[in-house]
Length: 252
Image (cartoon, rainbow, N blue to C red; front, side, top):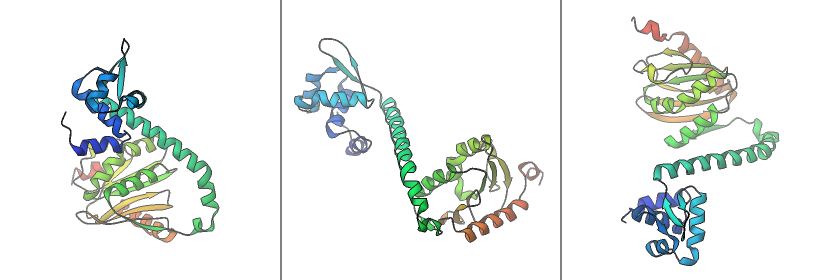
């Protein structure tokens, strides 16, 4: 079975060993097989084949059919990836729980925690990761200003905005005039504002993620500096007061 090296690399990156990758691909290519036959087809040593198959089954990539001998068959890639995703999410949850429980209190007791930080973020993945982290920590108030170029970030955060609003968080969202508001759903109070040359989010008046630019974000800054966050909040409030509600904008 001819499979690109890129596909093999992805399977290894998401957690399959080299032997597991070979065995799974052999099953996908040839169908149901017994362990001895699979060992020959996949070039996995017979001394390692049962260990490999047990691990693949535990990870959710294959199933067994009882008999003499036991037969093995692959789950569909979409089903296997979903099982892997759920497993990774649970692992991440446990990691975060352990780290937050023990390390966060130690960090917050250190003197440097009181010093404000200003970070420059580079790359869409870094911005999205910081955005998700900030949204997960909102308690009372969230301000969002989304210029035209920030559509991908707004769409990524929209489901969480809806959840936050349902939990009693005051969510205010200001979007560019060319935005299709129906795509956002019930994310909070929305206003339309033209002439935004930047945007971002402000969480509980204590930290801000600022996206600066015109056609694309040329500079992305995160900060919990009191003065910078206050300036961002005051500027957002000024823009908000002069923005249009979606209903009134339709009549202009």
